[in-house]
Amino acid sequence: MIPSNIFSPGGPAARQIAAFGWLTLILFSVITLVMWLLILWVSARRRGTLTEHLPWNARDTLAMRWIFVGGLAVPAIVLTVLFALSLRTMAAFPLDGGHDEHDEHRPPAIRVTGHQWWWEVQYLRSPEDQQVTTANEIHIPVGQPIDIELVSRDVIHSFWVPQLHGKVDLVPGMINRIRIQADRAGFYGGQCAEYCGTQHAHMGLLIAAEPAAQFERWLTEQRKPATPPVEQEAGLGEQLFMDHQCSLCHTVRGTDAHGQVGPDLTHIGSRHRLAANAFPNDTAHLAAWVTHAQSLKPGSQMPSLTAFDGEQLRALVRYLQELH
Ligand code: CUA
Image 1: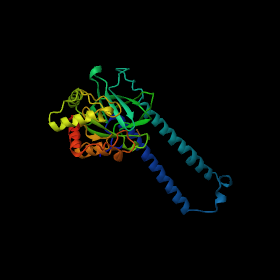
Image 2 (image 1 turned 135 degrees about the vertical axis):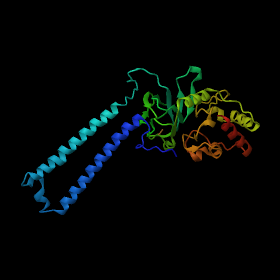
Image 3 (image 1 turned 30 degrees about the vertical axis):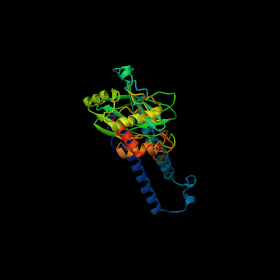
Image 4 (image 1 turned 180 degrees about the vertical axis):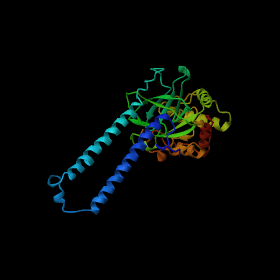
């Protein structure tokens, strides 16, 4: 599993949020400690009855002072300071993404569309006919701010990569923005953070941050249509894919499969995980996903395809793995 700890930030936005998180955590820990010490102290040196100590019965002003200082002044100061700091942290991340001195209306690099229960990922900074569509795995160049446009096809989802940024919702009919930046190359795990139906928990994603040259190579590879299978087994697999339901729901660019329901599979073989980050992309899981999707992820749009015999299933999996 990819670690996704909010306290080990991997980019500037997450660092600001983590700093604020630490401050809040430490402050409230100190306050809790002080409160418990006061409670213990009071219990140890208890005198008189509760009635004598009721505020309106208190003879000295000391009791009132405790209430005004400890119950009113201190909380007011602490909460005001935290409120101001949280406003400042929030203002650092405008949701429209456009407050940039250099290019005010920079178009987003990537559009992420939420589906029940997976993420469609489109790379927009290419000529129209070369735009790349992939799913669940977002490659970005390391060290560069990347603007992502967030939209939804069905219900409200929430885009959350804890090591890179806070949560931003994907709302039907609205366009939201988030700007992420990864300082180090590597994988960052993400998760849908807004309950969106039965498989909400299995709506994960993966950010792959790569050095710029490697990222460009990846993008160039992704732009290419699928290469026709060379070996016979994969060829049989392709035929099965086109003749059965697969091609009705999935697109494989360069073939007759133009389905729009499920993820684009043109380069499925190059992805690390399956079914929105739920399983590793290996032979066993790929075969299991084809035949038992409804057991692995009940309620998802992917049906359990039980019509294939062993040989056909192997061919189909082989074909998918060759789609690099
Ligand atoms: Cu999508 Cu929760």
